[in-house]
View (spheres, one colour):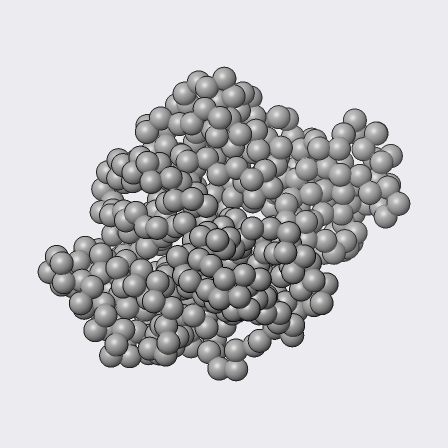
Amino acid sequence: MKFKIKSFKIGAGKPIVYMNKADAVKLNINIGDRVEVSINKRKSIGIVDVAESYFNPGELGASHLIISELKVKSGDRVELEIVPVPKSSLLLRKKAFCKEYTKKEIDLIIKDIVDDKLTEAEIAFFISGVYHCGMTEKETAYLTESIYKNGNIINWRSSKIADKHSIGGVPGNRTTPLVVSICASAGIKMPKTSSRAITTAAGTADVIESVADIDFPIAKLKRIVNKTNACLAWGGSLGLAPADDKLIQVEKIIHLDPESQLIASILAKKLAAGSKYVLIDIPYGEGAKVSKKGAKKLKKKFKNIAKHFKLKLETVLTDGSQPIGNGVGPLLEIKDLLRVLSRNNPPKDLEDKAIKLAAIILEMIGKTKKGKGQKLAREILDSGKALKKFEQIIKAQNGSLKNLKRAKFVKRIESKSSGNVRKIRNQEINHLARLAGSPVNKAAGLFLHVHKGQKIKKGQILIEIHAESKDKLNQAIRFFKSSEAIEIK
């Protein structure tokens, strides 16, 4: 049946088709059904919603994803057809009963996720099943391969392409730009693509976006890397492992991050980016994603899956029981980075961890002998080469490190008693920074004045809350006062 497109400016973040109720009844279409919209051989699949008061019979609206895919404008006539339930939808029940998937079944599920043939509810069902039952090593390898092959793949002339990734969860912990700058200064190519925040108050992409562009087509990304040896880009727009981006969107909603999908997600994106040498940082401890025991198991699984793809992979287990650095939030974390790079009162925990991680990559690639990596990394940092490299990368990404914005409202909170900082709880700190406006408001977040194990006096500043509105500031203050984000005894 033919419909006329009516302009309807809505992002939605998902493929949705809006229609008049009378048309839906006439075609026996229900809310949530799948339909295919087509024009001039271009096709897009969407999920039906009814917006009776806005659309007349014969009119159709669509979310931005469908509009851009079909390249249609208001007044264009499109064809609409009902799409049957995909075969992959019927496979989702299998994991709910803890049965093992074949390679063909995983390929079908992932392809249908990429093609928007599965609804958010169905993807959530898949994630929940995997979370509940887990996956075998073979299934995880199949999932990794399917995710990275159902998307764009970047090819490089050099075989020594390196990458570094943290499994996340720890506030601050912004080691990636430091590691990239140090290693790129040593001549190592690091096309670093990162995600936005999933479990923390800011991801590397959110942080770099506060000072530079992060959204590039593959051709421009390659030009930046060939010029500077590195980039700090957002992976979402490159078409690398698009299934993973859609899985992550749903994981955020249902607050589940299955281990097998975590492994597949990370390795698929590294493979798609053309990396041959990969370092995985696994923070562990109270408040981190995994315990020390869990970290050791995860380390083994990463190594086993990497072997399936002949990926040279190292893992490092690090203390994730408290925030790393002082800033939590995009611009506050940029300021931490610049303090380390410019050798101006750097946060020691952030600096030491970055040097440790960079050293492993320098040794993996053969830039120095085993055991000499930390010495070389520190020399590069102290010489100012890493700072120059970071500035070069930011400039190549149309950015600037001048005139870094400060939030409109800043509240310093003092300790009500003397004692020792016994705990700084990661989840509460992440939530607090989000309440303050991070990562959407780039200047929002927290500045920690204390760390675990530190002796403090009554009246000493514990934390600064940075916000762009009084409402967000007050909301964050109320939460801090009612929580045990920082425990003193």
